Length: 490
Image 1 (cartoon, one colour):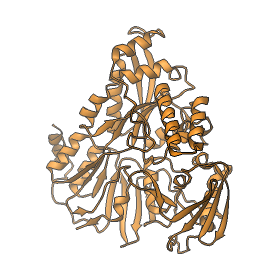
Image 2: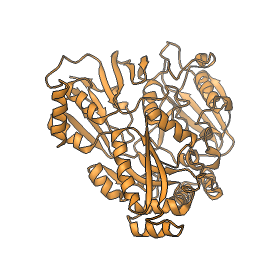
Image 3: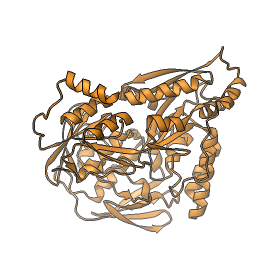
Image 4: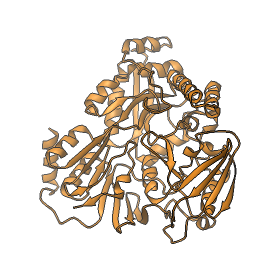
């Protein structure tokens, strides 16, 4: 059915045929545009992935989520003293050399309360910084934390431009493998790959069917994620390349704890039991996802492999809700915010139907990405769905669940406050040994799993689709766009 529908659209739009020869540059169609090109403020997935191409960061991570040198290698001189030394020679895209003073200026800006960076909370353990020489900088901490190097993932900005209040959000200047060229409109961003001066244009195409049509026509060259399984099957039949990789990005339902309904434990627990996640994964994702129990996947060194997903038990969900007077004649009414992406609306409709079966009447509110994400950051919601991408270190728990991380100081968007959660976060961060740290993080995950500030959904598989002449793109486990560094048209 979907194949006939796509073919009909192709004919109606005049898209059948070879089209004109492709341009030299590469065109990457994405569902959501970047919000900001300033790494001090990026929290959405697209911004983080694009900024990773424009800027370099001090450290990166290997496949086991262990911190490794990127711009700099480091030594731990004492429990609270780390020395980072820049490796090689790096130039910003304006031609100035990247030095320790630029690292200092970047992190001073993030830590300045006046900057209002959402990443400040994760870095508050930095007591002071000092330049040793042009290529060396020391970080002094106010408490011991052996995971500290893994927190230094902010893209480095040039200090001279920082001093002039340069608008990095729209005119970025970094030192990464791509330089900024133009951002003429919200849905079209052009970068240039420094290795061969090939342009890469990110084109926002919200509708997945239209993205597929543009790929078939040759108006775009690559797609990644956000495609329904039936469209992917049609693209394969049409000769497009498709690659898949298991992902670590965590999808969830989030709740507002200041709301009289979603702030109730019994309501969140009923929702957890009411969702038939396995059926959703099978029918909507074509088995391209795995059930989740925690922000950290079980394979992560600090993950909790013993947590068991909430089973699908609508009878138990109805019993829980009946304890607060909810029934078929007096259903609970909850608003559910999501983006206007057609697949996300489709997913929300399935969740709406499943919750309706346990006497929860869901009002779906879909918005363009900017409006939706803005509301979530401001706490203007009862329930919403999103995904955390690129999680590498367990300090994510401080960032999203500590009472000090309520926006703008972090991403505790649901205003979840639990002193025991705060204590376990701090206990894990200060643990003297790796086993003690893992034990504390597992206790923390078990408590969060019980209280349900998030209802865990799944870890979505990553998907890459390209035209036949595109070669060399490699998918990452966190869905970043690093494959663009080496991809070529043949």
